[in-house]
Length: 378
Image (tube, rainbow, N blue to C red; front, side, top):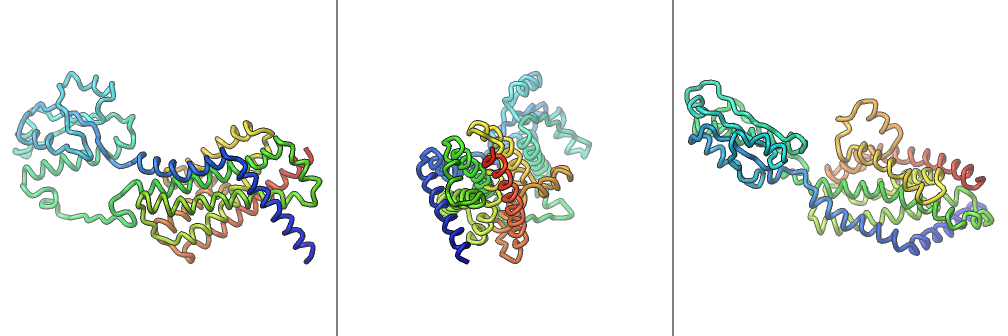
C-alpha cells in the first residue's frame, strides 16, 4: 500500500509539473483559447451549408405570363434576383462562374402547358459548386413546379397532389447549420488539440534535454506518460466545457438537448485515448517540426473520416469498418450526436464509454512501449 501511495505521489508531482509547463508556454495557451472561442464562433456562424443567395440566370424565350411568374418567384434568401440573359451568353456566363444555374424557358412554353402538351425546361448547372448545385436544383425544381401548378390549377401543388407529404425535422426543426457546426467544431477541436498538446509535451522534453532529468528521478515511464496524458487532457476538457457554455450556448444560442455532464464524462475518457495517440506519434519524432508533419495527415484522416463532416454510411464499407476498428474518433462523433443533439442518456451511450476505455488502454500501452524503446533507450 505504501508503494502505491508513493507511486501516486510521484504521478501527482509530474502532473503538477506538466501543468506548470503548459502555463509557461503562452503560445500554446493562446492557441487553446483561440481554438475554443473565436474559431468555434467564426467557423460555425460563417461557414454555412444552408442555401443562400444562389445566382440564377434565365433565358426567357417565351416571354409569357407563366415565364414571368417563374422569374419573379426566384427571390431571396435562397436565390438572388434572377438575371435575364440571351442564349448566346449562356456558355460565357457559366465559364466565368457568374451563375450557379441557368434556366432556359423555350418558346411556346405557356401554350404547351395550357394545352396539356409535354413541355420541357432546361437547367444548366455549374457543378463545381457541388453542394449548392445538388441541393439548389431541388429548391429550383420546387419553385418551378409550384408556379406551374398554381398557374394551371390556382391551388399550388398541394391542391392537386393525391398524397400530401408532411415532413417534421427532429432535433433541428429549422435545419439551422449553426447548431450542427458549432457542436461539431468543438468536437473536432477536442481531437485536434488533445493530440497536438500531448505530443508537443513529449517533444518539448526531448528538445530541451529534460528527459534525462526525469530518468534520474524516482519515477517510472508509466508515470511520465500518464502525467502528460492527464495534464493535457484536463486542459482540453476544461476548455471544451467553457466553450460549450459561453460560446455555443450563450453566444451562438445553440440549444443543447442532453446532459453536458455526461458529454464531459465521455470527453474525458476520449481525450485519454487521443492523448495516448499523440504520445505515440511523438515517439516517432525527434523535433517539433517532425511531429507537426506527422500530426497533420493523422488529424486530416481523423477529422474527415470520423463522420463529423460526412456520414459514415456514405463511405465504402471497408473504410468505415477500418476507421471504427482502428480509431475512436467515429465513436466519439456518434456519442456526441447522441448526447448533445438527441438528448440520449447513460443507458443509450454506455457502450461508447466502454469503447473509449478500450481504445484508451490499447493506445496507452502501445505508446508506453514506444516511449520506453524509442525515448528512454534511444
